[in-house]
Structures are given as structure tokens and as C-alpha cells.
Amino acid sequence: MKKNYLLILWSLTITFASFAQTGQQGVMDLETCIEIALENNLNLQRSQVALAQQEANYLANQGQRIPTLSTGASSGYRWGRSINPVTNLFENNRIGNINLFANSNATIFAGQQINNSVRQSKVDIEAASYNVAATENSITLNVINLFINVVFAKEQLNIAQNQLNTTKEQMAVTLKLVDAGSLPLANKLDIQAQNATNELEVINASNNLRIAKLNLAQAMQIPFDDRMDVLAPELDTDAFQMAQNDVDEIFAIALELMPEIKAAELGIESANIGVRIARGGYLPTLGVGVSAFSNFIDQAVFGEVPAFNTQIRNNFSNSANLQLNVPIFSNMRNRANVQRARLQKRLAEIQEVETKNQLRQDIESAYTNAYASRLSYQASLTRVASLEEAFRIAQQRFDAGAINFADYQLAQNNFFNAQADLITSKYTFIFRVKVLDFYLGNPLKL
Image (cartoon, one colour):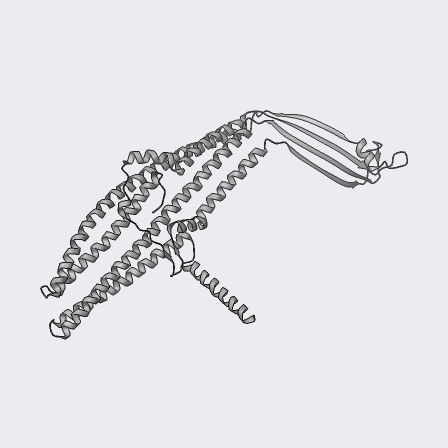
């Protein structure tokens, strides 16, 4: 039994260790990367805290509509000449007392400042929610770009490795021919130099892939691990079509969808309410207050000290009051508050214009880049097809001894460089199409 128990324990240990290792180096798809980035991003957490602060402000402003209520007690002694509360005469006795009190106050009218503050808080909560959504969009777009960079770097490494493999195969043939005396020694040196160059290209491609993974890990704000990898989806460029809308149409759609635009518009609405709040300082305020009081005195009446409950009941008193405050001169505070509120409104208007201008510029750039990348990708397809055939013919002619190594090497380099350019234009086009989809409100998925 003990042996079986140890065997089970050992198996569980290995299983959990393997699971932990897989969790660190597991292959992640795009959705997982986005989820991790959204969970860990500090800017998003900061915007979420800002939203929570606005909710707290709304709670506080709502509370101004509710009457206040406080109660308490005090106890103490007086020495020296003072009025005895029982006899209402001046005496030199030590007098002990216990006081009980309660107060409540409510604002009846405050120049609509309370109601406007509640309205402003609601608007600020909505604006903060849109800011959270805008931050999430920005993070998602960035992760998609970095994810595509990793996939692109993997394909570049694959191209470099294929080129190295082709060179190694050719080098093996060349070395045999040189050893047999069919080719001059210079061919051997040339193919060895080409092999060294291709090995360096593989190293550079590996480093670029590592950097791409590092950038993605940092965007997700997780520790970088060399074993980190991504699950590359099958990206068929035919499935990514550039939007048929022109810039004006995309901009009109984005104005209705983009959360940063909604937040900017709500900023103006909040500022307008702020002006009304400031103007409310010129209006009178009206409030009501009630209070209750009772006390106990340790002084004798007719030779004995009345009981505590008796004194509390007999000394109980109430009061109520209305308070009207009419502002006549407030050291220019109200005027300054109104001016500041109007300036805040102007800043909100400028912010809205700036946000819309930035959105249009981003859309114009995205549209222009997507259009250019589509043309570049189409041209790269034609170029690769032509150079692939040229390389195939060059390889046959080189094997037959019809061309020298320099011509063969040129055809090989041209073909592999064209493949690399095609990969670059392919992923550039895919990402820029997704950017346009983003402004059109389409799902951000590959």
C-alpha cells in the first residue's frame, strides 16, 4: 500500500509539474492574448478606477438630497461660580451633568445645485464608461498588431530556414563536383559563403521572432519566456477584403460607434451642467433643521437628586428652524465659479473637435495605408510567381552546368527576397484591413 501511495503521489507531482510548465510555455491564440492584456493592463485598470470614482461622486451627490441625522452625548463637571440648572441661582458648587442631543438638517432649495450635481454625475459616469471602452479598443488593436508581428516573424524564419536548407543541398552537390574536379574551387568557396550568409539570416530571423514575442509579452504584461508561442490562424488574404466604403462614409459610421467620440460629447454635456451649477450660487438657499435635547444634573432638589430617567423626561426639549440664505456679495466667488465653468465648457468643446479631427486623420491614414498595402500585396504575388519560375529554371541550368554560381545565387536570392516581401505585404495588408474593420464596428478577430 505504501509503495502504491508513493507511486500515485509521484504521478500527481509529475502531472502538476507538466501542467505548470505547459501553462508557462503554452501556445496562445489571439483571443487568449487579448484577454490577458485586458486583465493586466494598468491603463485599463486606471480608467476603471476613474469610473468607480465617478460612481462614488454620484452616490455623494445623491446623498445631498437626504436629510442629515446625528446624535450624541456629553458628560462633565463645572467648578466655581456658575448657575445651577436646578435652582437657576449662582452657586460655587461642583456640578456634574450628562447631556443628550440629536440634530437633523435638510436642504429644501439650493439653486438647483444638488439636482444639477446629480445629473452631472450621471453624465460623468457614462463618459467614464466610454473611456473604459476606448481603452479596451486601443489595447485590443495593439495586441492584434503585435500578434500578427509574431506570426509574420515565424513565417520569415521559416523562409530563411528554407533558403538555408536549399543552399545546404546545393552545397552538398557542389562540394562533390569540386572534389571530382568537375567544378573549380571558387564554386566551393562561393557556396560556402552563401551558406554562411543564410545561416546569419536564420539567426537574424530568430532574433526578430524573439523580439516580436517579447513585445507581445510586454503588451500582455506577463514575464517573457522563450518557450512562449502563439497559435497562428490560417490567414487567407482572400478572406480579408478592404471595405468598399470611402473615407467620408467610414468617418460617419465611426462617429456613431467610437467610444472616445461619445465620451467627448458627454464632456460638453457635463460642462454645460457645470455652468448651471455655478450659476446656482447666485440663488437663495433654504434649509430646515430640527433638534432635541435633554440632560441630567447631579444636584439635589428638596434634599434629593431626581432619578436619571425622570430628569431626562422632564428636561426634554425640541426645536425647529428654517434658514434662508440670500447671497448679496460673495467676494466674487460666484462670478469666478461661473467663469471657470464656462472655460471648462470651452475646453470640452475643444476636446471634442480635437477628438473628431484625430479620428478622421486616423481613418484617412488607415484607408490610404490599406489601399497601398493591397496594391503592394497584389504586386508581390505576381513578383513571387515570376521569380519562382526563374529560380526553378536557374537551378536546372546550374545543375546542368549552363550557368555559373553567381547567376544561380542571384536567382535564388531574388526569389527568397520576393517571398519575404510577400509575407511582409500580406500581414501589413491584413492588419490594415482589420483597422478599417475596427472603425466600421466589425469584430476584431482574425
